[in-house]
Image 1 (spheres, rainbow, N blue to C red):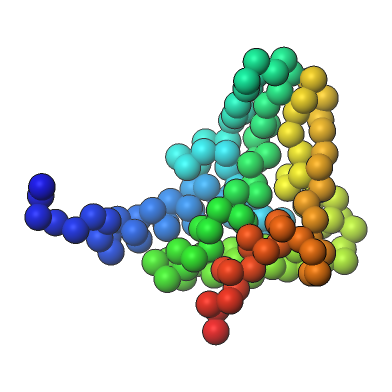
Image 2 (image 1 turned 30 degrees about the vertical axis):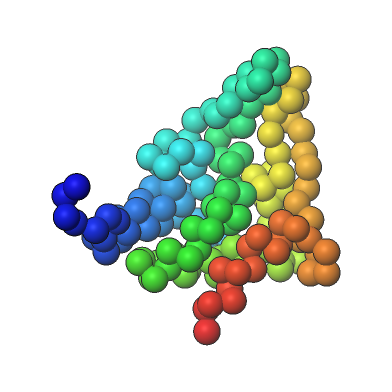
Length: 141
């Protein structure tokens, strides 16, 4: 025992800053996230579970930036609120270019060496994906 609480405010601010400045790739118009917390954006889970041709290419884990609860860290780094609002805007867009971007980075992975798409359901009435995202906004007031 060190007698010191962990994590303390310093560690929480550092983790939040890592998310805001290394994992988030900086484009608020088209928010993307690196596959790794270090900020490195390489392939992940290539050949996972002995599946030939399977893997997540760079930024294919972007949904984790939206659904992983990271938005709640805004109390440790206010720039995360800008990311939250950018994600909310992306979810609610009618812009075809942004929708195509969202489908590319929030709904794709590789299977059998082909790009495979499973678009996220973002319907306001029955979306499990959206329900995971909404708590971030419930506390924004």
